[in-house]
Length: 266
Image 1 (cartoon, rainbow, N blue to C red):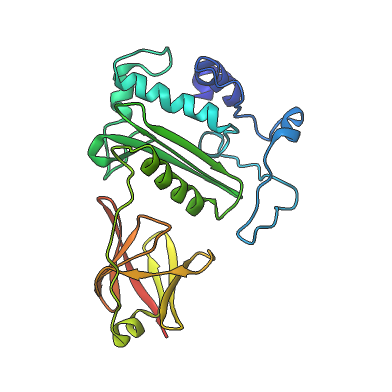
Image 2 (image 1 turned 30 degrees about the horizontal axis):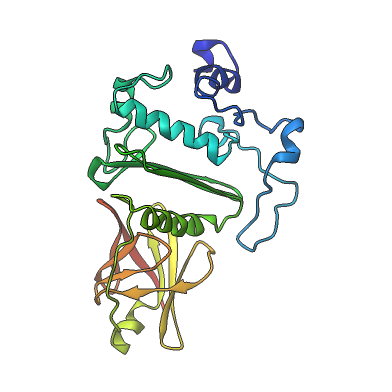
C-alpha cells in the first residue's frame, strides 16, 4: 500500500480510513507522537507491573500499530454494520463489507472472525501489555469495544463482553450454560501434566486440594471444569478441551479445532 500510494502508512490510513470515519482520536503513527504520550494508557505485564520504558514499538504497523479509543473503534464497527445494511459510508462499500463478512477459512473472513453462523463479527487485539476485543452484530446494531492495558486483559474483556450481551439481551455472544461434573480421582490424575497445542504453545493442568487447575503461557492459574470425562472448560474463555485419550485431544473454539498432545505427565 505504501509503494502504491507513495505515502507513509500512517498518513495513508489517516486520509483513507480514520478521518473519513470520524476516528479523530486514532493514529497509526509509530512510535506514538510525543504530543499524545500524556493521554496514552501504560502497558502492564501479567504480573500487573508496568513495562519499563512504556509501550513497545511494533514494526508491523498494519497489524499492531493502531492507537485508538473504544469510541473510535466502535465507529469502525458501526461502519461495518452500515455496509452490511447496504449503505456506502465512503470507506467500506456494501460489496467490500460483504467480502469482509464472508468466511474464508473456518470462521475467519477478511480481518474479522465471523460469529453465530454469520450473524456477528469480531476482532481481537494483542500487543505487549495491551489486549482488546471488538464485537458487533450484522443486523440490529448490537456491539461493544473493550480495550485493556494489561497482558491479562483478554480474560477480563471476555467476561465483560458476556455480561454486556446478557444485560442488553443480545441475540448472540450469550453465556453458555453448562453443568459441571466431578471426575473420578483416576480421571483427574490422568489430566495432570503439560500439553502442547500445535503452533500455539502449551498449557499445564494441576490438581490442588481436589480441584483441577489450568494455566497457559504464564497466565494465572484458574479452575478447570469438566462437562464430562472427555470435555473440559474454564469460565474465562469459550475455548474447550476435548480429550481423545490420555495423551491427545482437540482445543476447540466454535467450528475451529487444533490438536494438542501430552508432553509431560505428572
